[in-house]
Image 1 (spheres, rainbow, N blue to C red):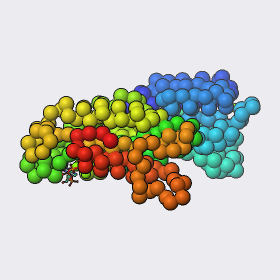
Image 2 (tube, rainbow, N blue to C red; image 1 turned 45 degrees about the vertical axis):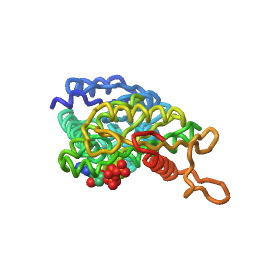
Image 3 (cartoon, protein in one colour; image 1 turned 60 degrees about the vertical axis):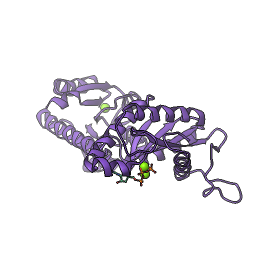
Image 4 (tube, rainbow, N blue to C red; image 1 turned 30 degrees about the horizontal axis):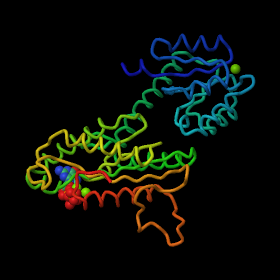
Length: 318
Ligand code: GH3
Ligand code: MG
Ligand code: MG
Ligand code: MG
């Protein structure tokens, strides 16, 4: 399989000879990363791109395989990388212990090279299917950008990260202007095509790697802007708004333009000062003044500013 060539396998063993046996067995089919101890293994596991599979020896000086897998499982970035123990420990108790720690398989030495090769091949196939499913589960079918499920997850993670690192976080809510009239005039199928074009324009307008555009629902999109303060978020919003307008998608029933436009509401939480910037939604401000900052609060804030952008004449960022 073509894709298998690109699959990366991290092999960890303190004995050179063992590494060589496995490397010779697998090097034609996979990209191999070799580690001689636990510390090195962890370092390589955290590198980008991460390995697709890890073959892990148990008995190694300093840090053994059981400790390595514990650390891998504790980290969000590495916890889903499948690990196979390849070890001289061959009692049933050893095998049970290894599997309990989260390994997908346990292979005792000495092993049959062709069987090990087949088993590894099967796991790699499984990894590919899993990745494909993940991609489909998180992609909006109509616009081919991240969907609401993905948005919820990323916002939650970025929110936690911003709080932890004391960095600002901004969220933009984008709503297409007079889209009901658009559908009424041009038809729903054309409306779908136009949503695709709007999504592509938004994605192109967002330049920073950590930023994200998702389909929030219907004709609404969301921008997640980590490490972005209020003023910068308004600039990013302006670029997004202009990018859509520049597509010059005809919309003769729009009362402001003969073209498709969007309105955008921004919300920012400035974690260094622990306060919200911009227009704070009155509905969420409690009487004692102690606002509870949550992802929902940020969405509410952006939503209310979106409402203002609409009230103020649409095709603007608020
Ligand atoms: P406003 O400027 O106030 O946002 O006006 P609007 O007409 O865009 O607002 P409204 O929320 O009333 O209408 C949204 C429209 O978007 C209605 C709905 O049919 C359309 N829409 C939502 N999702 C889709 C979709 O997936 N495909 C198409 N073609 N239309 C959609
Ligand atoms: Mg060893
Ligand atoms: Mg809407
Ligand atoms: Mg709308």
